[in-house]
Length: 182
Image (cartoon, rainbow, N blue to C red; front, top):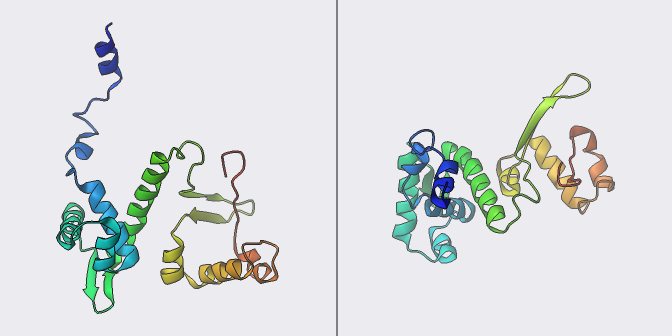
């Protein structure tokens, strides 16, 4: 078999499950970056400055994502752009994509996998769920126990044995990276 024949034998059948990805507009990645930055800055001017693109381009990117997802992602108000309820859910997904893409581009994706989600039953039969979320989302919209835990973590300088952290230690399950895993 020649080299081209070998390469074609390892390529996936693009007519099947990959069809959806192939039909996405080529600007989807740029649109996600615009969405991600606007969600974090809440300012069109600041987003334009950070990305080095025009206001019209940012608006076009947001419109593209809203068209693809069939939902409104932002509501503009006097305080800047605010994520809609659906926009907050979409932000979690897009931020994971941006994070994974950045890690992949930096050559880190295979070295240190990101903890996305894990769940199961503990030794006492209780159910647990662990999800990774941006700290900004936790501070703004997190449940009160998570806000208390984050505050204690910061006050203790990230030290698990700090007095401020001992108050909340019983409310959480902690992970640490060990030999390339969690």
